[in-house]
Length: 243
Image 1 (tube, rainbow, N blue to C red):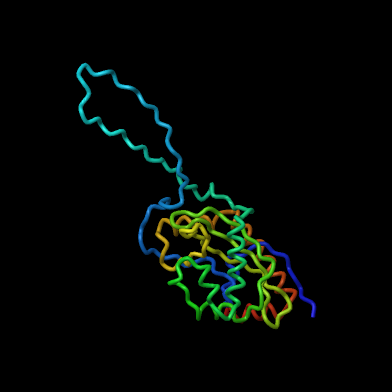
Image 2: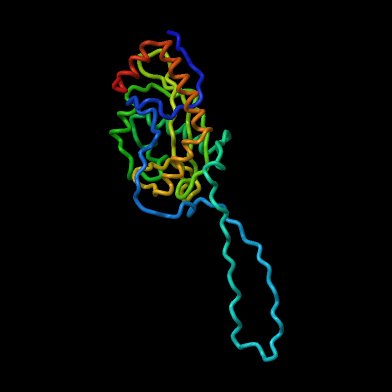
């Protein structure tokens, strides 16, 4: 049986078709407030000049005044418009994403848990349900933007999903939050209600910018073309989307 393979880029609103291919847009909710650049800024030591005071006419005090300790001045967090899409994603993140897609198709969740930063948010039943129709993920490609606050990167992943009993792959896109752990290993951060209102607003603005919107539009077009070529794929997606 010949497999029809449609080359695609990315898709975010790819209908919420119920097979768990898409987790974007994410339902972000407020839990607590922290500064948006608290953990994701690039430190830079401020170059300060010093002026020697005049020599006093009386002896210096017995206990000298402590020398002030200079603290680094952080570089401001990139504004959303400055935070352009990265076509070259760190290799360890690409590996993490590939490991994730392999792990979610396994019967055991042991490998899956190792990839998640905040494992308390794992819902094994829901995860299994999202992939119950999926045979494999193909042609996985990643784009990324710098994160903010507690998130190090936001990664947009495009792939072609092989669905059981259907010849044509379904173009798809998922969004992931990435956070490095204390051992400097990237992990997938499950948002849940962990994002602050500032982080939520920042990521929503990122997703509305042209570089992401163009990817969404392109994959939407590719998915529509795939469905027009394959009536079974079209009926499958319509059924899962409730249309």
